Length: 322
Image 1 (spheres, one colour):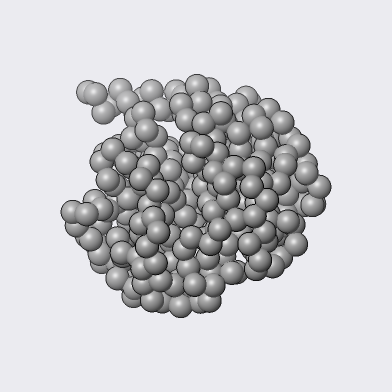
Image 2 (spheres, helix red, strand yellow):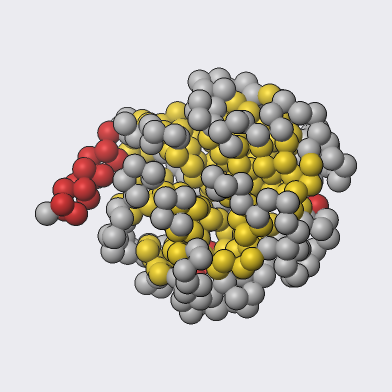
């Protein structure tokens, strides 16, 4: 009965949401002004509900205060490069509770760290060149930072998630084997990761396996499929190229950017199927919100908002959940 009530509540919440543009141009036009974006990829939300966007095409991270469509640059210069003040094709971003910023500087094969309000960053992870050693990676799809400052890196082409502890050069592989596969201990192009500090669970968007895998870090390198894993498709128990995942700290519900289906799915904890809450015909305030292709998703601190970056449309949506 408890599970049924939770599922019913989630469906009701989904039907009551409203959507607004949180960053970028509503019409999808790209640009380089402080109110525009060019192929936004990763997003992160501050404890004050400010929005941080990895503005891939503009080689910068831009911060939007809550309610403002005009941002400010907090990392990068807007010109591609590899100095400590520059970025080259940033793909992911994470902001901590002190408003320090971590950036997945993809084309420079490194993770950069910016102290709040600093004009230059510090290289904290990576070698600056492509590789598959314990200190290097290839396509840096995303990153996540836990409460202890450990950095989790999705090494897309090497089919693994790497964990870097502070001030340590070599990583520990916490998910995947380094070879593509569909076994419980394998991944096939991991695109996004989320770490649950309370339970030490690592959730991975296992892109080409069309599933979300959960790994108990420090306990087992075998994962469990907690969403999808039923073949590629659009049914309620399937996913199609999941690009991003995040988990509610309040309910443990799983939110998934199901990119191949142009939708965001909500899976209650322990559920065997999901509910479409954005995109693909889902209605918000009596309007259908279009979503297409690669998307990152993040929840605000109290689950008030769900943010969705729509890379191909150069904008970020904000959905009000409560």
